[in-house]
Image (cartoon, rainbow, N blue to C red; front, side, top):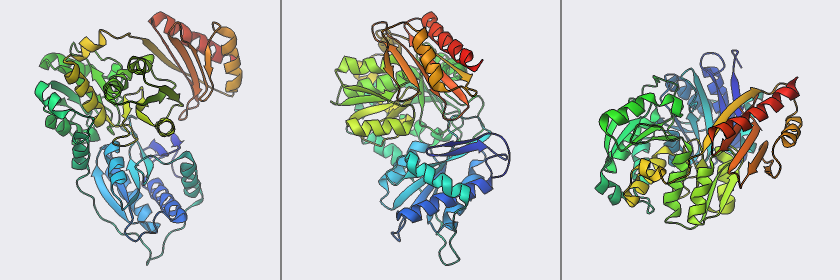
Length: 465
């Protein structure tokens, strides 16, 4: 590998800084490694099989996707290039195309513009398993065998993936599209110049919404930190107020996370996206709701109101998806604005999230602010601290000794302590992308959530001394 600087390896792919650790050479090698893996497991044995390659709107995406496609073809795998599209759009295209044996998506999700990455999908339209990701990583590091002149994979394009995604969402039996059209809401939308601009605006228009948009161009020139957290939503909040929109919506660069803004122009927090989407689904379907261990109690309460089973999984889209399959969940996702609807695909999808939330508002004949006024609002505080050489187990022992008694423990992903009667919890886990520990707490009061985070932080710092 060339270059220096950050380089992140996850179960489903890699990401790095463009021109430093993320280069065309890296993309070629990683594409070739994925191709050789597909050859090794027999996925590409069908003469008509191919891998779909697509990307978000980052300025480096065209170059790097061409390099990744070249790596796949050099390993003997035919490729169809879909161009700019949201990640869930591309994964749905893989799932619904019987000839597609996998997908390779060029995206760094919510990372700043200087980042890019490669994420791998299986033929099921879901990100690959940790075991597959490790196998590809080993081939990447050792160097994958390439095909000779007679065995190179063919190239080509794949048109219509955005239209396919929109049509599939609109045809979901779960949705009452006409109810949304009758309401004809004014929606303020911020796609932050990301790939969501090729799907979300048109979907909203076909749902009968009047769209007041910013950042709809798909040029990858993010005008702000692209992660759709409240601190970054000032412009969409102003747009809601200036246009009189009923609701504001902001998506991340690859279109799998959706954040909401109320009619008064105040961001409501990403966890409410899943809570409200789940409330709509559970009002029409019997089944379980799944989210991760760091997501809000507001999501759990959506299951409680519906009398539905509720489960938590370790942090990460793939882990949530695995749990959803295990318990036959009807809806799930993560508290970062990622909604997963098995009726469509077991991936986070901002387009699905938008449709479900709008359907809830239409069904209740209420605004977002009116619905949230009847819900308990919790305060969540997040912090990360340097992990150093401290054994996390030593930190967890210190936490147990320093917190109030009576906590329910979960050790599937770090240590999560919950006090059900007080409606508060604390979660400390090693980051999968940085040498830090992530500390998250939630409580009915901001002061209590901050106290829990401070207590955990002090325990970590004491262990590092």
